[in-house]
Image (cartoon, rainbow, N blue to C red; front, side, top):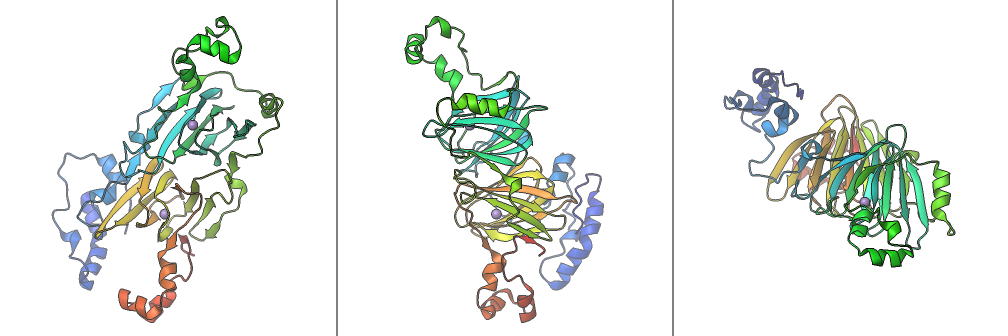
Length: 408
Ligand code: MN
Ligand code: MN
């Protein structure tokens, strides 16, 4: 089926394109001839660009259920930006996407020199760089310093309560995605250095730091959150200055994703799985999936955790089969968040003509999935054939191990 989302394609053309497939299905007796259904039009009002991006919502596949499945998509385009001199942030939490109870995402941009100010929070912070370069700082539980520079697709992880900062570097700062292990997390509810200082009696601060009250009179009266300052000097100089009398931290809060070979590579695409076996400090797991045009992230589910998705490039669609005979298909493109609850069957198909790249994120220190094909291949064949009403040749042709991205 032609899955073009060009809004210039008229309903009539769509119906004509659908007709052969529908006719074939009708002859097979599986479904009525839906393409001939004169109800498949919408006199309006409509929003053609949005409909074109969401063809599987506008006209769901016949296999979707008519009973409602909780929405599992939220585009960052709908999230309002908190803009500052120095950068901006926007977030998709359980407030925007009610199904996303276990994780929340914050998208942030910092200019060269722009700082996400020193702060901490209770949630664990996992991040992936999407653009440019940044310098991150932290200390470990022993008070030893950590300062590192990160580039596109590098990760970092700051456990709950560990203070940190992020600053954009030359030439054009950075953009990154933060993923928190709490759907209720909000970037506007963190403990900021500036805010904390503004809420403490000046005489206490003076006593605490062993300085005069006069020397602290310039403290900000309100939070900074994001602010513009000078681009920092060399990494070595910052590491040395921050280290002071203590050695540097032996904990690496950063991970260089692209220095690792793909975990699995096929004709259809590849996956890089980074869990705590590779990125020791992280209690959040990432599978970065690339699906080539025509490819399919195979049918599977995750027994151990909900899946929070972020689409980085390309176009795709996903069907989630929910419990109680429910199913829904939704379309995704760069900038969208998707969500699949623990144990629900799903696939992700590339519906565009460029590589589809997306993240599968889990609130878990390890990765776990069950491949539908692998399960069926390791079940007595007669039993599977009786369920699916397929012959032996068809059973034999099905993949016998987990492929991850089809085709093999
Ligand atoms: Mn943070
Ligand atoms: Mn998945």
